[in-house]
Length: 399
Ligand SMILES: [Zn+2]
Ligand SMILES: [Zn+2]
Image 1 (cartoon, rainbow, N blue to C red):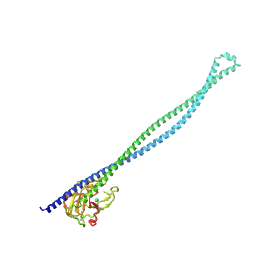
Image 2: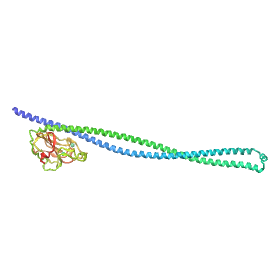
Image 3: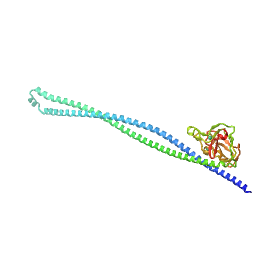
Image 4: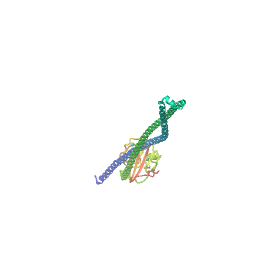
């Protein structure tokens, strides 16, 4: 073997070793990106769950506030009722005191009268008769004392009756007062219970907010990591833009990779992000060609296959909620290096028929259209990288 042949073999070996190491690193990076995407998705779902919990807790708080203000109203009403009742009790107590004084006075009068009658009673009829100026004066003296005492007794009885009636209504009022006081105490207990419940709910909501903040912080961190991985990935792609198995792209039109299907469902560049109802990133890094499942995908140019990712089994249309992030969202994909820094990418394949390190010629079938990865329906996502940067494929396709 001549030195020249050996050096060519070494060069080819070096190229394939470097392609395989690129494929390994590229696949590794895409897996890491995929894991990050999954974790971000999970964290976002947890945030949604927390938001749901916060919503229902806020509704419960509203109900609690309404209940508390209702209790406060009831307590206010009760307080004014108690105030009125206290006034009534004071008035009635005053009346009772007056009545008691009347009774005491009357009692004194009666006692004096009875003493007088008693005295009259102990005097003999003869004495009264002898001492009275006349019989009629004797009779009237004796009779009158008795009559007056009788009248005083009646009066006393009446006062006593009235006093009893007042006492009865006072007792009633006091009964009512103690019922209201019991009711008031019960309401205050209920109010305290509601306030405690409210404080607990508020604590719960602030815990939820803390959890949400922590999750958001984690998401931000993961998104930063994702961007870093993406940059590393682009750097790798840039370095491998020349690992083309000897092919050197010197300009000119790339072949349409999806013959018979020219409808572009999404162009390169800005489009609605997932948050606004669109799909994928707001910066679309390729063009989407709508084609039925199983349509042949052809190599747009000759070159070497530098990467194959073929581990997504989710070949069905997805929504933002049901999306998978296999292959960093590309699902099953192929990357071909054409030399001079130019790389093409074919994503969301349903099948792949080439291997890493294999050289392909322009127009050769490399796989079939599918909807693996983060894809809402069957299509080919066709990407073009120049020196590691995604560029608009349109000019390369003479669109
Ligand atoms: Zn998948
Ligand atoms: Zn796309």
